[in-house]
Amino acid sequence: FKMLSYQHFKNGFRILKKKGFSGVIDRIVHGSSNWAEYDEWFNATKVTEEELERQRNTEFEFAPMISIIVATFNTKEEYLKEMIDSVRNQSYSNWQLCIGDGSTNDSVEKYVKEHYGDDSRIVFKKLEKNYGISGNMNGALELVTGDYVGLFDHDDLLTPDCLYEFVASMQEVHHDCVYSDEDKLNDKTKKFEDPHFKPDFSIDLLCSHNYITHFFVVNMDIVRKVGGMRSEYDGSQDHDFIFRCVEQANSVYHVPKILYHWRMHPLSTAMDPESKMYCYTSGKKAIESHFKRIGIDVTVEMLPRPLYGMYHCKYTVKDHPLVSILIPNYNHKDLLKGCIESLMNVNTYSNMEIVIVENNSTEQEIFDYYKELEETYSNVKVIYYEGDFNYSKINNYGVKYTHGEYILFLNNDTKVIEPDSVEDMLGVCQREDVGAVGAKLLYEDDTVQHCGVVVGYHGYATAAFSLIDRNDFGYMGRPRVSWDVSAVTAACLMTKREIFDEVGGFDEDFKVACNDVDLCLKIRSLNKWIVEDVFSVWYHYESKSRGLEDTPEKQARFQSEIARFQKKWPEILKNGDPFHNPNFDLDKGPFTYPKA
Image (cartoon, rainbow, N blue to C red; front, top):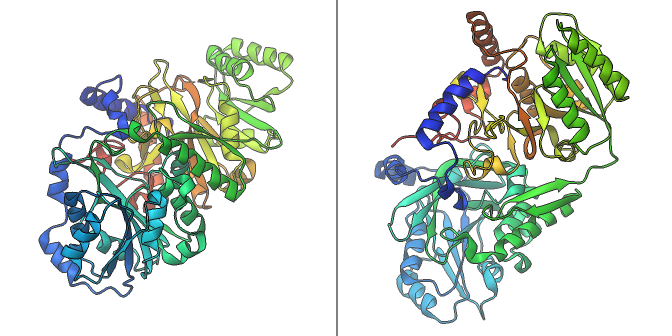
C-alpha cells in the first residue's frame, strides 16, 4: 500500500482541481457537503411508485411490528401533518406510531384526534406536563406494543420505503439494532441536501460523535433491559440511548440508503449547531458513561469550535508497557536521523526500544550513524537483513529481535509532530477489542498523506482524504476524529505482539505492496477493530527511501501483487468496504459523490 503514491497523486490532484486546495470552510457545519446536485440525485434514485407497490404486496416471513416513538411539543401543524403522513405512507404496514405530547396547549392533541382518530395504529398520550425531551419520549415509549422501537423527531420525515428496508434487512438475521443513512430537508427551499452516507457499525466513530442519529430502530427486548431515555442526558439523549442499546446487541446493522429526512429550520441544530450548546456537554457525558459501563478508563475531551459535537477519547495507558519501534532502513542517513530525533526529543512516551533493520545500504555514513546511535542510546539497536528488499520479510525478521508487548511498525521517512502520538496510539491499542492502530500522516506541506485506508478502489485500496489540508473537515469530520477502518498503512502501524503472531505476521508473498492492507484484513478476521487515530500526527516523506512505482518493472510487480490480493480477499472487494458507503463513487476516489 505504501507504494500506491502514483495513484494517490493522480486521484489527489483530480480532487484538488475540482474542489480547491485549502479546504472548504462552509463544509464545516455538520459536514455540509455543498453537493449542489444532491436533491436531483435523490429524486432520481429514490424509490419509485412501482417499487412501492411491489413492497406493499410483499409478505415477509419475519414481519415484526415497529413502534415509532415521537415526542411532540407545540409542534407546528404543518410539521405534524407531514411527520405523521410520512409514517402512514409507509409501504410496510405493520407499524405503530406512539406520540407523547408535552405541549403547553391542546392544539396537537386536537389535530391528531381530528385528522387521525380513525387510525388505530396511531396512539396518543397527552402528558401531564412538559417533561423535557427524554421524559416526553418515555411517555411515548409507554404506549409501545411492538417488537421494535424506532426513534423519530416531531418535525422530521421518513421516506415511504423506510420501514420496508429495515424489515427486509432482518430476514436472515434478526438484528437487534438497525440504522440508516439520512439527509436534511431545507425548510426554506424545500430541497434535500447534505446527505450523511454512513459506515457500517463503527464503535470508535460513535465514541467520536453520534454518527448513527436517525433512523435508529432497536429490539424492544433490549429497551426493556436498558430502560428508556434519561433526562440527565437531554440534548444528547439519543446518543446515550444508542450506546446502551448497542452494548447489549448481538447484531447492529446499517442500511446504506437515505431513509430519513432531518428538517432544517432556524431553531434546529441541523441549521445552527450553536443553537443548543448544552447538547455537546450531554454528548460528552454520554460517552463517559459508556466507557464507565464497559470498564475502560478514558478522558473524553470536547473538540473546540467549529467541531461541535465531536470528541477525543484519550485512553489511559496501563502499566507503561514496552513499545518496540521497528524501522527498516536503506541508506538515507538524514531521513533516519530526523525520525530518530523526533522519537527521542518530540515524543513523550519513554518506555520504548528502537530496532533498526538494516537492508543492503551502500553508504558508509549510514553505518557510522548506526554506530553513533548504539553508543548514544541504550534502547537503540541495529540488526542486519541481507536478503533482497522484501518489506514483509524484513519486518517479520525484525520482530524476532524485539521484546515489547506492543510493536510500532514505522517508516524511516516519518517524524513525530504531536508529542503524545505514540502514547495516544498505545492507549487505543491496549483495548481488548482493538487489533491495530494507525496514525494521521502528513506531507511536508501539511496536507494529508494518510488518514485510513478504503478497500475496493480500482480493485485494491487507497488512502482516504489524501491532499486535503491537515485541518480540513473532510467528509463529516472523518479526518478530524478517530474512526474504524478496514486498514491503515504500515508506515505507522501499532499492534499487539500476540495478535501479530496469531495472524502469522506479514504475508511474505507481498514483497512491497499490499502487505499492510493484507495484515489488517487478517486482523479484522479475528473480529478486532482497526482504528485510525487522527490525534497521533506524523510527517511522512513518502517513498523517498525506496522510490516510487515509476518503472515498467515496478509497475508489473505492483500489478502482480494486486492480482494476488484480489484472489486472497474477494469478499471485501465484492461486498465493499464496510467503513465506506456504497452510495459513494469509489471508482473516482474515497468519499466521492455519485452523479445524478
